Structures are given as structure tokens and as C-alpha cells.
Length: 571
Ligand SMILES: Nc1ncnc2c1ncn2[C@@H]1O[C@H](COP(=O)(O)OS(=O)(=O)O)[C@@H](OP(=O)(O)O)[C@H]1O
Ligand SMILES: Nc1ncnc2c1ncn2[C@@H]1O[C@H](COP(=O)(O)OP(=O)(O)O)[C@@H](O)[C@H]1O
Image (tube, rainbow, N blue to C red; front, top):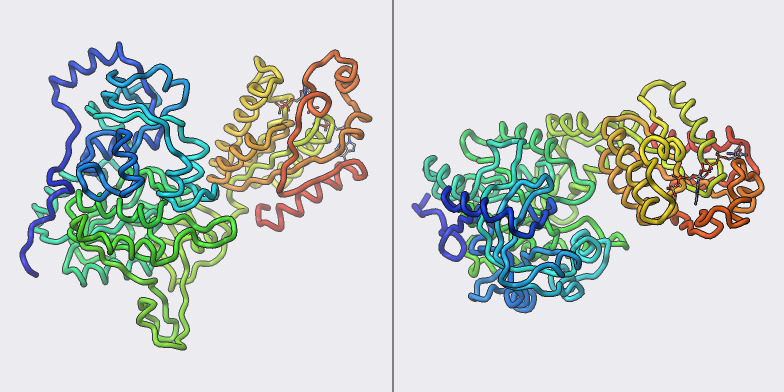
């Protein structure tokens, strides 16, 4: 192996934005008088990577000219290649209270002071342009675009940062080393070359073979940099992934790799994302970086097509590796040859040879639906760790979410379903009926849109906790707004099953029943804003089940729900 030093950090110097004790004291004193910004989890990831120099040479959030330069030329203003905007977004309300020249205190959700930012610039986010330039699409099925369009504030603030503390982490503290710490460690171990591998999935057999091949090709040791910041909805949680990485670690040659967690908020921008990962790896001291198929890309678009061609990230990063000073090891898809019982890159498979392959998505789906993962696809210890954390549907938590007009039959069906689950007796069951919740959790709330949303979100939160802990939650609010229901669905599906049951009994029938006499009062104008009378109800477009109870008995309706849940493997 030829001697070579670890590559210099990008831009020449490893940035460290953490200030010394004296400065911390001073900043803490003035912070109390500064306007406060509470950072989101994503923003905290950016602050952490800025502070530790993983984003070197950046020294803060981008100002408008830098943002424009990254969008238009993919360069910082000093001419260095830089693929993605690193901007701090704020909502209109916050933006109105801020001005350039002002300093703000950046805090976490609990009010813990992380940094002071000196605002140099306040400017509008060019969301349409950013989506096109960075993600190459405006399709909201792309999680990066969805976040940009639907969650991100409309204004960016740019400026230098002085970091006081890194965001606190209580998990895997020993695996959270900064670029300078990894560089020191590699030096101590006498490593000349280090190849970086960035992943948001567990390491299965193809990825393991890929890393070994890369280590041999580059004569290098391995730096595993799994993302533990923000990944994609539906990804395995990082606790489970790290258990898997620790198992895999035993399969590498001794002392040949370092596992280090990367608190990056993935943008899933495919080619541009890959380039950012490579720059980060260089800052950690890597001489080489692995880019395989579909690196940094979301699963598929609305038509089931990949957002970027399989080779796009690899080819893009290879075209720039001279500029960013890290050698890209681009690999084709790794395929399994069942007759030969070996792995080969796609371009090394002779024509006509039978091959098999599973994507990370395929394995996630198999685990979540309780289907087998063959041993050619992954290792037994990885599959077992994943199964423990993600049991088959009949052992997962579950939320059955009834929605529909008052009098549609939600409570009646919910109560019968509750009894059936209790009779089965294999999981704890909680009934969150609209009335019960309003009495116990939401007594102070009215029926305005804002208050209905708060009420339904509270129900969703409790149901998500129950589902996370593998119980069954049955919810039965009116929940008239589609976007709030979608929000809840997303949250719960992270932890287990979610079945939306639209009790679609027409208003005429509900009104005929008028069990509580409320429709009569609403029609007489004694109750204002009554759902279906003078307040909206947005029917679900694609519920798991739609039941009109007009011409069926409650028991029949519940039988349909149980049959559906049985078919999906939940009971
Ligand atoms: N303005 C207005 N609109 C709709 N419903 C009203 C209203 N005022 C009181 N009620 C009674 O409250 C029950 C609905 O409460 P929810 O918590 O399920 O509603 S929401 O999901 O927050 O929209 C609902 O009970 P159910 O009949 O069990 O659905 C009504 O009886
Ligand atoms: N198939 C059915 N399913 C549910 N409820 C029914 C059915 N047929 C008649 N009903 C009656 O309709 C009314 C529904 O009221 P409820 O369950 O409180 O509705 P919601 O909770 O949607 O306001 C009850 O009086 C119930 O007995």
C-alpha cells in the first residue's frame, strides 16, 4: 500500500464552530435578550454538521447570493463545488420579527441553547426553482420536495453561527464522533486510506460484499457512516439498524472498520445528495467513497418509477470527484447468482445467467408484512434483529380509525369491535371514542376547524403511542379534515398498522336516526357549525374500508372489518 495522508478537509480547513468557554459565558449572558428560534429536528441536524465541520467549509447558513450560486452553478461563492442549499427556514410570522444585522438564539424544542446566529440576510425561499434544480422534480411524492413545499417555511435566514453546545443525544454516545475525532482515531490506528460508506438501510449481503470489494479495490479501511438524522418515512428506526450494524461488524476483518453515526437530515436528492455525502466523507478523512445504484434516492414516484436512473448518482459524483478531492468508487448493482452461489456486479454477469436481487425497499416490505427473507439476501442475525423490532402484522400494534358524520355509526361499530378484540385477548385494546376523548382529553375545545384539528391530533398521538407499544387503538371521532387524517396515518404507520374505516352512512340516514337530537337543533339554528349541516366533512379518498350502515346490522359491519384485518394478517 503506498503511503498517503488523509485528504485535507474540503476547502482546506476543518471548520469548528464551537466557541471557547469564555465566549460561551458571554453568549449565554446575551442570549436571554435575543429573539429565540426553536429549531426543528432537521435544522438541529444541520446545526450539528455545521458546528463539527462535517459541512466544511460552511460556517453558517447560506446567504441569498450563496443560495443562488448553489442553485444555478452548484458552487459556493468561492468557486468550490457544493450540491445542496444549507438554509435555515422560518415561517412568515417569525420572519416579520427578524432583520439583517440582528443575532438570534437557536434553541432546541426544550429551550436548550445550541448556538447564536448572526443574521446577515433574510430572503424568500425560491421553492419551485429549488425543487427543479435540486430534486429535478416538483412531484410531492418525492420526500425532499414534499418537505420543501409543505413543511418548510417560506423565508430563509442566512448568517454565521457560533455554536455553544451540540444538540444533546443520549443514544449511542460513543458512536457519535466528529470529523476531527475520526481523523485522530484513523491516525492513531495508522490508517492511510479510508473508504466511506453511507447508508440509511441495514447492511444486507449485497452491501456487505460491496464494502469488502471497495476495501480491496482501494486498499483501504472502512468508515461506515449510517444516517441517524432524518431518513425516509418507512425506513427502519436507527436503534434497530445499529443493532444490525453491530452484528455485521463481526464479519469484517478485525480492526478494519469504524462505525460512526451521522446526524444528517437526508434530502434524498439522488445525484446531488450523493455528492454531499462524498464531501462529508472527505471531511471525516476518507480518501474514497462508495456510490452504488440509486444512492441517496427515494423509493419511487407516483407512477412506481425511480426518481433518478440507477446509475445517475454514481455517474454524477464520478464526474465531480476531481473537484471535491475524494475518489468515488462507483459500483453497479450487486446481483446474486443462485447456481454459482456468489455475488457479482451486474456488468460482470454473463448473458443468460439467472440472477436475483432485493432492494432495501423489498426487504423492508418483507419484514413488515411478515414474509420470509431468503438467506442469500441478508444474514440470519440481521433478519432476526429486524424481526424482533418489526414483528409480523399479527404481533404489531394497530389503529382502527373510524371517521364519518355524527350518527353514521362510528361509536356503535367501535364498541362492538372493542368487544371482539377483547374476546380474542392477544393485545391490549383502547377505545378512543369521540365523546370519551372530548370529556377526558379535549374538554376545553370547541368545534372550530382549529380545535377539531387539535382534538383529532391528540387522538392520533395517543393512538400512535398505543400502536408503538403494540396495542390496539380504536378511534371514532368525526375527524372531518383529510389533511389531518393523513398526518395521523403517517405518524401511526411508522409504528404499526393503520386501517381507516370511513363510516359512509349518508347524511339523510344520520339525520333520520338523530340519536342525540343534534341534527334537529342544527337545522333549527340552535347549534352552529354542525358537521354535514353547516360545517364541512371531507370524505376519505382511499380508506382501507368504506361502510354504509344504512342497510346492514352493526354486527355485519364489524364482521367486514374483521375479515379485512384478517386478510391483512393483523388478527
Ligand atoms: N358542531 C358540531 N359538529 C359536530 N359534532 C358536534 C358538534 N357539536 C357537538 N357535537 C357532538 O360532538 C361529537 C363529535 O365530536 P368529535 O370530537 O368526534 O368531532 S371532531 O372529530 O373533533 O370534529 C358528535 O358526536 P357523534 O355523534 O358521536 O359523532 C356530536 O354529537
Ligand atoms: N349498521 C349499523 N351500524 C352502526 N350503527 C347503526 C347501524 N344501524 C343502525 N345504527 C344506529 O345508528 C346510530 C349510530 O350512532 P353512533 O354509533 O353513536 O354514531 P356516531 O358515533 O357515528 O355518531 C345508533 O343509534 C345505532 O344503533
